[in-house]
Length: 287
Ligand SMILES: Nc1ncnc2c1ncn2[C@@H]1O[C@H](COP(=O)(O)OP(=O)(O)OP(=O)(O)O)[C@@H](O)[C@H]1O
Image (cartoon, rainbow, N blue to C red; front, side, top):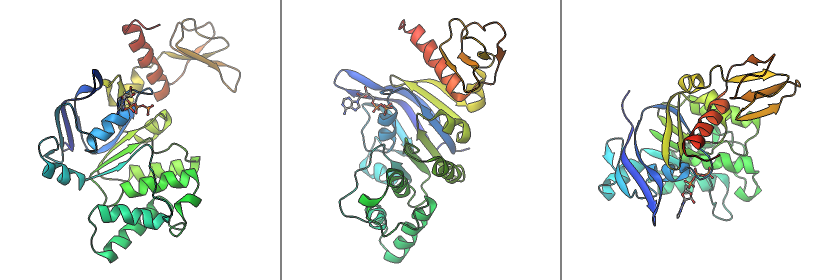
């Protein structure tokens, strides 16, 4: 599969603080989940890829265009990508259709008929086809989130960058969004705290912390890091990273020494993530 994005020694520094990098990684077509704790640098990385933010060092190449080199390259890359930020501010008074059309105009969709068809297409994709004439201010939080995603889908971009897209969506809408994203042909990078979205949707997972990649691999490889380390039993495993009493009354323990009468259970992406975070804290000497 061809490389859609290449980051070569990319970093972002504010003052003396390096919040991302240096990162060197290739992104190919597929759905990639980006996990990491609050403040890990996920949004900053997506903003770097969206070309909204210049990198401090390194080179970012999108669809063959070195976006750090020239403005013309950035414009060419922007024509190939869609970006849904974590928070979108909607201009006052606009309808759902008006907002997406406004973005389409900014994206140089000059012919009105073609543009209107495209706006209707992306609104249908996010199940807002029956809300086109509604004022954005009258939409629910989840509907506004879907509207923000719709604008990123204009023109079926080769690179789709989604910052916490499922936050605030109800289970049906979350499943519907999964259906939509899994049917796309391009490279989709999703920053999320929803580990179940990663297991349901992603073929690759990147875990970052303090701006650095700590895991990069297929979801089954990530799950394998937790194999045999998650237990269910009447009591908690001594030394476990996390334990909680489940609805069945049994205690699920992630890591630690298995307690008597406990059994090994299949790990989830969340378990693998918790174990990776714990190992990283230990490595850094943080208790
Ligand atoms: N404009 C800025 N100036 C200085 N520091 C910044 C700026 N933007 C982000 N940071 C810092 O960069 C780090 C990474 O922030 P970022 O928003 O990328 O994290 P995140 O992984 O998206 O977090 P969250 O999961 O909470 O959304 C944080 O420490 C943040 O305070």
